[in-house]
Length: 148
Image 1: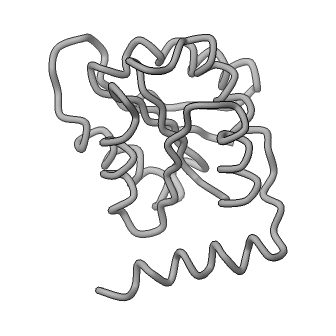
Image 2 (image 1 turned 180 degrees about the vertical axis):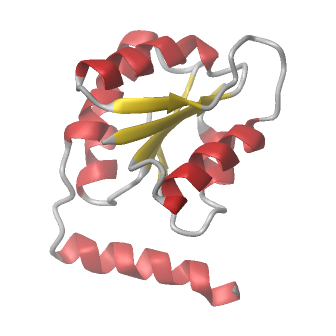
């Protein structure tokens, strides 16, 4: 599995923990930036990661900003993306198991590196349950097409 990782300056404090989790799982990854604490705009990194996932260049993604909220909103504007903002282990599990999320979003100002490491591992190793959840995910994805 290949994981696309991106962050703005507010999320960079979590990137090392995310990369460690991904590497320990034996997955390949691509770090799409940012690479330092200089102020940047989170939609630019959301777009890079979401495009990589939507195009199939990456299987899943992880996005990080100050809270995880803005970057998740931006990523969800890309067709085919189900980006879940999580703040606890149970939400990381449910994002994968019930929502078949393909991008995980977390916030560097509200999530510790230890939690980001744990949430990343949970998200990337939890299989989608399918069944009734697949019907619901299909309904979510149809909402993208309403205005297009």
